[in-house]
Image (cartoon, rainbow, N blue to C red; front, top):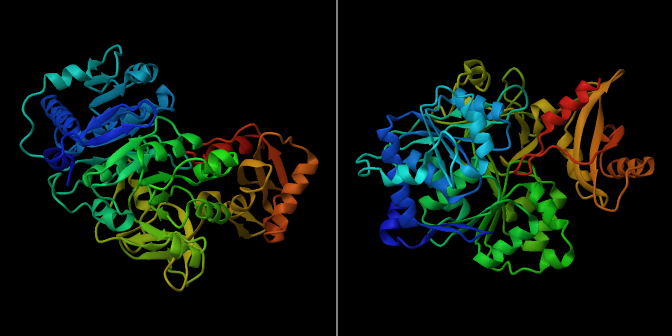
Length: 511
């Protein structure tokens, strides 16, 4: 299915509802407006494989643009609106986008990008006016008949990465019409998540990220309704579930933590009875946090592991997780292999680089053949990796340890920061925490905890000692932080994902 299928049957059914303002978009409107935009982009000269860049906040128009690209063979590149104009312009230029569509709410960024993207031929804005941009509504009003053919487009999204400039992840376009079955993730969604026509899906994160964008699209492909938060806040999430009878939602683990940190009356004061599944991903979830959420909401958590590159996919139900505490599940789209630095497959239980095997090439890094080559196994071209480390157990369940770039090597021993962060997440004084490696003259690196405290707590040598003792009671002594720094805030993306590379850069500059 695609939105046109539902539009033909139930044109007045809500496709998108904004959780704050209540603004909505029906399936009939989504079908009509995305078809008009697809026609307009075609008339501007765009053809299969060309790129449209989107600079947007969370708004229904974002999904109109998404479906316009998908139904006309185009790539859509969404741009993080928290970037500077120079950083955003880099993505637009690198993608080769010929058209930029922007929200007037982001006028400053749109104008700044326009001054640095001379190869863009057309600029369009919605929700108001922006200098140098055509009116989105006028573009739609002037569009001709819908395109007869609807070749399936795709996303070319930019991964944040840990070093250097972001890289565009460019999957090959499938030789399908948009209404033909065959796209793997869309096909697996009913089995994995139970998506269907009765789904009411709460999207909590910025739409420019891979998971929110793709999941909203998959919900539409199965005829459900997307409820989109303008911006995440923990109590707002609970209120949205109650007010819109949400059946499914997706969060990152930090959002779970923020819910658990709410006062008791807020945390338990909303009607959550409609909720069938709480999906979480993007970072390993501290087991204690997950157990607390299971106790709060029941056995409805489903964790998955994937990446912007889309090279693999694993998931685990609550029932499975309670038997395999800490696992992200089993691979669903092909075998998983754990390999050492030379590419040799490691025995069960040993930590190494995670490779997924597929039956075809899944992606390349746009304009970066060296990085593309580095993502492939040295001897198996259909095995690819994105830099995550982990191991599998005797039953094939995958366990993540950390990103390869973040492993601390102290005295020749590998220490995985995620394990220590998991322990500290529920310390009563800790609001947020990152664990990094800093130079050590004897051991090469030592463990440092960088902590943002909860309200009412003040950093002190005594509290630092209590934090290290807390870890010492739960982990081996060589994993205990040798120092604790207290900070006002930690760098996190708008989805709540820790931007550890930025933090590490700060500390390395101090050396």
